[in-house]
Image (cartoon, rainbow, N blue to C red):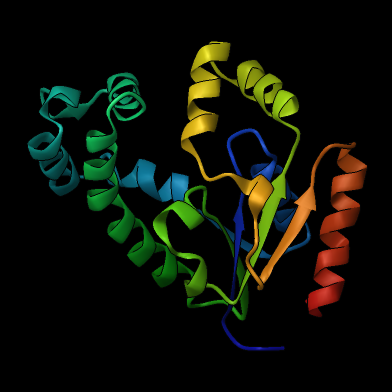
Length: 192
């Protein structure tokens, strides 16, 4: 087995990438999350300071308003670019520092292709799902409206036109057992 093999799990909002990561955790693999790293960063003074300088309206009394930040970045492309310029390098630095201690590890990376990070990994798994199932999934787990969910889906990478040679596509349109079987097939295929 290759030492320090890093595999990215990606997909659009509501695709099931977190479920794939949970399956991998149950199987005993080290699994990391860019979203979790981002949450940690948003509590740190240096990060809050940088964000308050770039997007001042989302920071008040030294705290980030997650709701306001989401509203701003999903309606203003310049704000989104500013946020990503601050957060992406820090997230990736921490992610790879955490992954380096494992012979095989997985990372949930929501904005993998948008950030151009796919070449940093030894393999990529893209989880794809029918749009209506994605919308239903996100509405059920959040306080977002259908319109807000659609806006987020439309702002993300179009996984339906995926053409990356080291990318494995896992379709998540069936049951949990179907998804689990597909993850097991991927692991066998890669000799993991």
